[in-house]
Image 1 (spheres, rainbow over the protein chains, first blue to last red):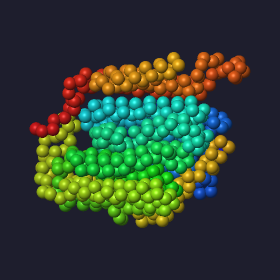
Image 2 (tube, chains in turn brown, yellow):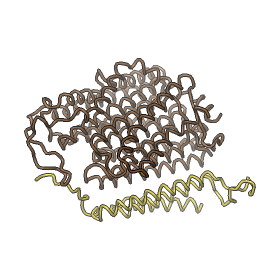
Image 3 (tube, rainbow over the protein chains, first blue to last red):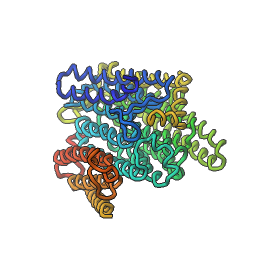
Image 4 (cartoon, rainbow over the protein chains, first blue to last red):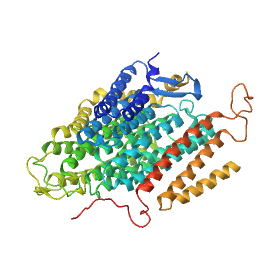
Length: 512
Length: 110
């Protein structure tokens, strides 16, 4: 019994807990599981992070099969960071779901636990086919979660979410089949450097990466994300934004860096798409009519920023990209939960539907100001270090790589700055329409029977309760903490980026 | 060659059906596409007919590669589950997606 053989528990415990929640239908058990399982993930991930200070990579092959036929569970610093952050975000979203009572939807607890089990598995797996399976384990409960929560529009939306993700999964599966046909293995450690040596394997890996880019919500295949996410409830959208696209991006980081070992030959295409993702995402924010619609487009913009790291592809840029990913999970979760608190209390978070909230919701005004500022990249929030790190690493890569590097650096830095300015213009409008303007005297809270209820006078006792705001406050506070204590956590990200750029210890741990 | 052409025909048919507007046709389209993916997976490990991959019974040189078969088995199970779910969605939403957007059940302006 070694430390590494405990790795599959990250996937197994949430799955077993989901089974328990289905078999034993008790409200207190559901609540306990919904809180304890993410806490357990968080504790386990922190233990892994501490363990990785001395051992760079921990690997376990399920059933003690050896070499390339095994189903490996691998953890390095990057995995442990992602496990910790997704566990934390899941915990905050779960607390919010408990407060709004959405966990009482039929089987909601079991579905959320299945989802987190799939996410943990997808983060830990070291094998492409296993990645496909865990991505499916993560998506199947999401289909059901969309169908049981949110407004009535969810059913039509659920259809497009299911079809987009299912077709993408089929493309992913085809990619995995092509990789197996070309390379004879789907084990990531065995595929190290294979794509840059053999163009056929390179093409096959690219099919896998295209599928992951669709799942991540990259332009021009981002349209499904802003049209489906805002239609679920806020708590579920916070879960999805923290888990789904980020797992796809994690897999892109991992697969691209290990199989190509440096930039791929089609990198210019990636550069153009990443620039388009940043600009389209931030520009579309301007036209959103709802609060969470605007946030969904900011998620697309965030995907572009995170993938800048892959375009530049140096150790410093990967560290900055990971930092930006962590910042984005935390900040986006906080913002979505804060807008969820607004929706739950006032029945509406349309831009223009609510106004003059500044005197009424002071804490929310501060949370939104900090969170939206963090998306733009303003101090004192984590977004600043993420964007600054990306810009600095792109500039440093230019010095190293010469003429082509100058193009990459100029375009990415310009793209980040322009996207940030557009985001700033769009997001200050969001904030000011919510918190400035005429002070409302009536509001229309949700009616369980007909959807939107009749207008009611807005009295002083109608306020977002402190308990409802607590998860959002914790997440935004974490974003602030990432700003002030960046010096403490940055070495972790540098270690993680080093592990991606130099996979020798990863290969040694998996293949023995 | 037959395997490759089957994959091509299935993928083309699946894509055509996916571009239709009715949910049930899209479900069939997804079904065809995933069959194409399954055949492609088989083709990656079994280019010609070989013996069953049973240790100590077959000559290892003649045995088929068991790994793609395991892949296909897993993929079939996943597709089956999702197809059932999508058919349920198709039934729940009625057949109203051909003419107008689905009914939301909400009244916005009153």
